[in-house]
Length: 227
Image 1 (cartoon, rainbow, N blue to C red):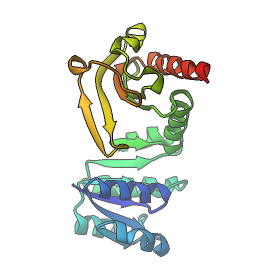
Image 2 (tube, rainbow, N blue to C red):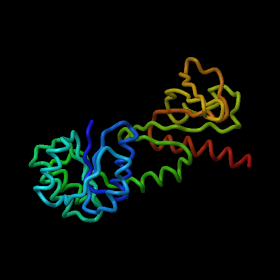
Image 3 (cartoon, one colour):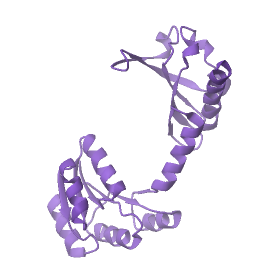
Image 4 (tube, one colour):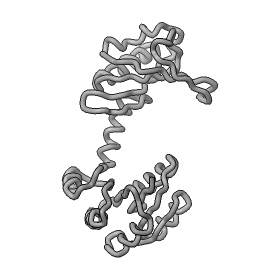
């Protein structure tokens, strides 16, 4: 897949680097030469250009031939709108755009943007999850279901899986991620093969987001009591 990113600010550069790490072919465009210089070694191509100029956007798109375009400007929503309109006129079907508020998101959806990202909202949600869930990782699937990775406290070492209060919170254990040699080697263990819990195991569970939070809170509460 070939990705063309407009905007080499913090968000755009982070997106470009991560996509590259995941094996994508990434090109970045920004009017700021210093920003382009900073990211050029991390991507397939970095271009100095004004994304609010129709001719320049057209030339870049024709040269790169991207499968997906991402418009990643910060507070300059006018630039986001212009770049998005030009891309739609050029027939780009898959567009990702950054917005700063819900009104901007609605406008971009009206323009046919496939996926609109609100970084501040996402960061707020992630921070809330970290406060409640600690080291656990959380992946919402919809309003009623989520997948979470929950670390087992050392106090449950060598105990039966029944010692984990999953049924109490209507959670389904998908598998256990067990690490050896300080995280250098790991093994996936599915429930039928699980004889006992090891301290430090990671449980990957499916269930209601609120119930997952209550489950994690109970485990943490037990640890605090022992301390």
